[in-house]
Each structure stands twice: as structure tokens, then as C-alpha cells.
Length: 315
Picture: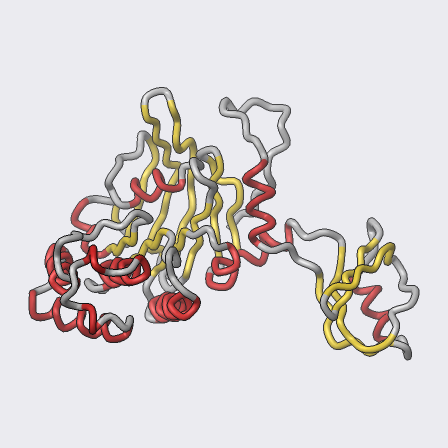
């Protein structure tokens, strides 16, 4: 697969403050890629460098096979965390105007806008001014703006903000459709359960550096405790290598001794005539749990030794 975006050892300072120290990652066509980080980690600065709003002090950014330059911006769609619509324009007029800035004719922009307005259940509000729309409606309008010119690379920053569960599902389906069509999606969000559901790969930035990078599954496995989840019928009884059993919502979490093998536990359960296994899996932490753990770890600004680094999963 073609690499739509390559971020190669970029850095950026503002006076004496180094917002991004050394960030590298790549994103391929047709994938939903998560760009994560706590507030103040350098994530927004990284996005602005990708969009050519800021120039990196060092390093390179390659978009669609070319070093980033303003001419490539028409092939990028961007949903900012802060809304940027013209509040006194009518919704349809605002969408058409912004699509025109990306090179669409008025006729084509209007046709595409009306299609999206219908899908987003906004047709009845098309003649309302932006400032007359609810927060959720404005969020959907902003998402439409990012999509109207059919970008090859779509960067969405907090796309689920202000949306109810019905519209969250709508946006999830839309992002998956874009990826299936070969578009590249960079998803930045704080709803870790949605990131975990949508993204196959991820990078996490903290203190201006990459601290996690790889598939979401591999990152979760890296942080997994030595435990397994079991669901079934009957009595578990004594099992080899199991030091503790906790029962939660119809399943049991089996804590294993150091060096104990989950496969050995599974063999013991499978051969037991007192328990019928319906589910057995290694207990993986949620991305939310990992995010909190990594975000709390302090990384020295000068790169001094003596502080254990966050494990890095290479992609």
C-alpha cells in the first residue's frame, strides 16, 4: 500500500519552548490511523505542521509522495477541534463557499453539499445561519466541510465532540466508508473506546516525543497483565499457575503466577469435566487505561538518563 503520509523526525520550537522534539510515523492509504496524546503533548503542533500551517525546524513531511507544499492542501480535508465556520452565513451557502476555496465549482459544491445535508439530517436547516444551529449540528456541518472536496487525506480532530450516540454511529460509518474507498484517515480523539474500535494503528505523542507506535492490538498486548478472561459453565476449581480468580459480570479474570502459561490453563480447563469453556482470551487493557498510564509518566525535557522510558512499539 502507498504511504500517504510520512512524518520524518520533525521538531518545532516556539522561543525557548520545544513543542515537538522528535516525531516520526507513517500512514498508508485506506487506513484509519490514530494520532493520540494528552493536552500539551505536541499533537496539535504536529497536525499544524502536516497542514503546512507551521514549518518544522527540522525533519520532513511527505504527503502523497511529495514533500509538503501549499499545492497539496486541496487534497487534504481537515476537521479542526475548534469550529471555523462563518457564523453569519447560511449553512448551505457556507458549505458551498468553503468548497469553492478547494476548487469545486458552485454547481458541483451545491450538489455534493445537498447530498451530505440529507445524509446528516440537516436538509431542513440548510437556510439557517451557522450561529442558529445546535452544537451537534455545527459539528456535523464542519465534518461535511472537510469532506466536500473529496480529499485523499482526511485529518479529523475530535470528530465526535458534541454528538449524540446516533450521530456518533453516523460518523463512525462515514470514516469506515472513506477508508474502504482508499482514503487515508488520521483520527485524533479523546474517546479511547472509539479509537480502539476504529483504528488499526496508532501513534501516541507525549512531551513532544513518540512514546507508542504500532498496531492498537500490539500496543494493548504489550501492556497486558499476566491474566486471562474465562467464561463458561460449571466450577473452575484449582487450576495450574492460577493465583487469584476474580468474577466480573458473568466472566472470571484469572491472575497467573509469574512464568505461568495461558495455554497450560486452557488445556486444564479443556480437559476438566466440571467446566465447559465458552470464552477464553488473554486479558488486554483498554486503550483508555494505557493512555492514562503513559500520559502520567514523566519524560525529562533534556533526555537525561535515570528515568525509565515508556516502552515503544515499533510499527
